[in-house]
Length: 88
Image 1 (cartoon, one colour):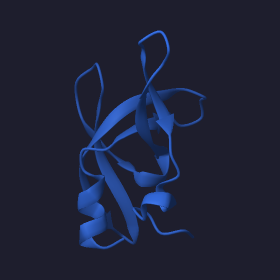
Image 2 (cartoon, rainbow, N blue to C red):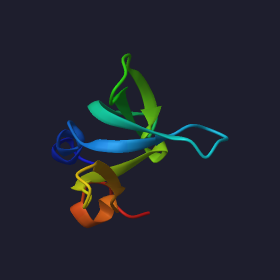
Image 3 (cartoon, one colour):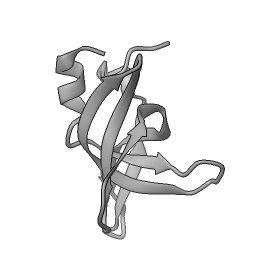
Image 4 (cartoon, rainbow, N blue to C red):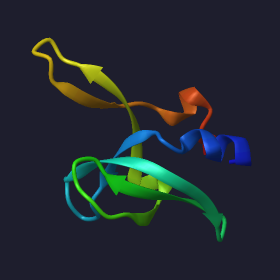
């Protein structure tokens, strides 16, 4: 991932997978770094507080959709479609 692709991730919404569970928390990506050959995201929860660095493979990037009843829903997208993360 180059610097331009990393910058495009900032501000994106995603679902953070909580390790060893089926729980996913909606987050916003605040920052991106490359360290020891991996990509990390600094994230903050939507509707909560705090921030932490996590490996990017724990965050599924999402798009926002409005349901028929007016609720806001995060829908996972494949980041390779956006050329944000190269396919492996």
